[in-house]
Image (cartoon, rainbow, N blue to C red; front, side):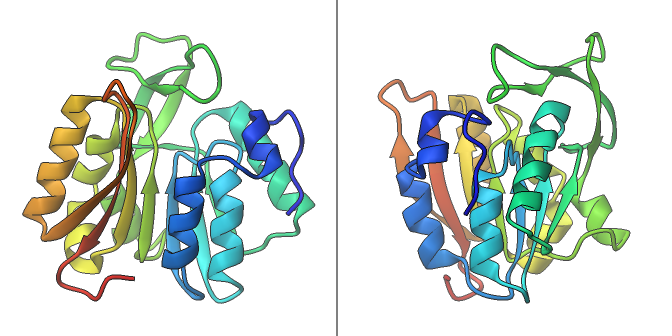
Length: 215
C-alpha cells in the first residue's frame, strides 16, 4: 500500500514496523470484521486492518492529534480506502474536553491529567458512541494510547461485556498493565503476552474472551 515517506519513522515506510503485531493481526483479522484502531497515529495499522477486513468490514480510527490525522487522511486518500471512519478524538472513561500533552514527538502524545494545557482535545467513551449508534460494535480492538489504556477499557465496559471483542493492547507502565490485566480477567478474557521490553515499561498482549471461540 502507498505510504508517504517521512510521515512516521523508517520502519513504517519500509513496512517492517512492529513485526510481532503484523504477524499476529494477519492470523486474527478476517473479512467483514469491525475493528477499532484506538491511537492510530498516521495509519500504519489502520491500512492493514482496512485491507484484511475487506469491503465488507469497517475500521474506526481514533486519533486526537491534528498533525497525525492529516497524515492518516492522506494515506487513506492515496490508497483510495473507503472502509475507514476517522474520529479525531481521544478515547477515555469520561466524555469531555481534556488537555493533551504533545510530547517530544508525535508518537508519544497523551491525555493530560488536567485541562491546564495549551492543546485541548475532545474525549469520548466507547460505550457512549456505541449506545448512540455512532459506531458499530467491535470484533477486534487495538489500543495504543501512551498510558491511558485502562481508561479506554473502563469506558467500554458495556461494549466489552456484550460484544467480547479480541484485543491487542500496548501498556506503557506497570500500573497500566496491572489494571488492564485485572479488567480483562474479570471480564472472562485469556491474556497472551507477546512482547515486553527489557525495562518492563512497555508490555504488549493479545486478549481473547473465553466465552467465544478465539479468532
